[in-house]
Length: 257
Ligand code: 13P
Image (spheres, rainbow, N blue to C red):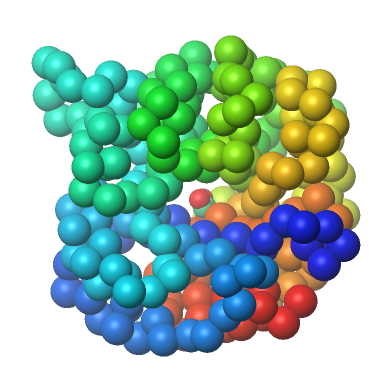
């Protein structure tokens, strides 16, 4: 838990393909919640079309704004894509990479996640790299192997100096949008494993600095026990981040830990 170490608690919302500009405006106008920035960080990853409004409305606040994906090239003939350079230019600070929905519906692989991560880090953005197993993989008892592989391939050739801009999100696919949260023990066990693998990839000391989030049906009623786990440093929150009162409650809970 972040009380025992120097890591912050990151309360991150992933809005996915939800909310228009008007709704974004209303949400941010209502997101008037106090938190200690030394201890808690708040992030909202919004659709590309809402980035302008969100960045404008959070200019004078400590709420961070991010995107949910990007391409691995800075520019070029890639119709429909958005580059990390473009995100950087408009002032976005974070980008989610390798979300399971992108892996499932848009052919994202560990290799493309790695290319994107390199491009994101080169452009001095922070990356939230998602990993997680399917229900079948959990039942086959290969969760740790799957996670190790996603991390080793996804983080291949990443320099230690860039570690400060990497956040890992453990999102078991069976817990996303299903209302089924991993138990705090299940979540902690995998997040501890993630930290060990990060220790092998970088160094034990570096691994201690990296924020590891849990995602999958996190809400106000269950976030406290999750955020209190030794190797869990916050949440990547989907559905519950669309409700401003609930999101505020989760920030307050994190602030009180
Ligand atoms: P839910 O919180 O809706 O389960 O979504 C989790 C998620 O995918 C966040 O990236």
